[in-house]
Length: 148
Image (cartoon, rainbow, N blue to C red; front, side):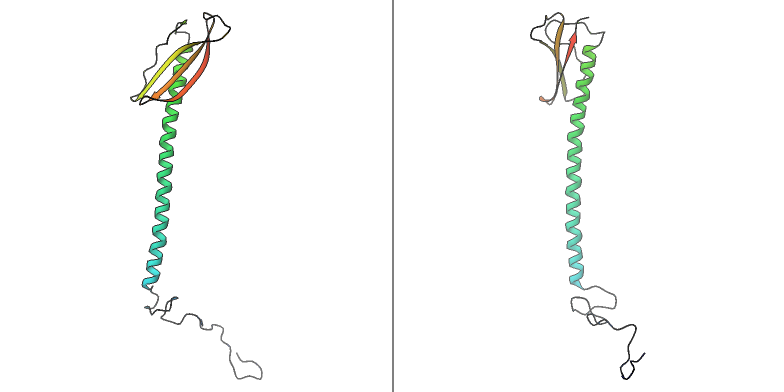
């Protein structure tokens, strides 16, 4: 294709003025279609940083899951103990602690009576259930029980 009145021709596919054939973007010589050492090292560094970030995120997620699992176990134990204590098969105690369900290994449960101010002890009491894990208190649950 030629301009009118000009001897110059236009090509529909001009050569790239920035990167000549057989050279890399960084100016070094490379095999046709290959990568230079600098390009490979940069890509390895980028992949390494991404891998370390992913490993950190997975580790943090796993630790959060373990804490949540222990907390949910303690909550379920406290709820089960409270339902057992308030159930019709459990006698009303004026003082002391109630019998407890059998907890899993490492956990402990206590369910004790506390007095409610201004109420007769033989009518209404506060039940406090405490769940411990490795002798550290994890969860406390309070509710009331009426003598019926």
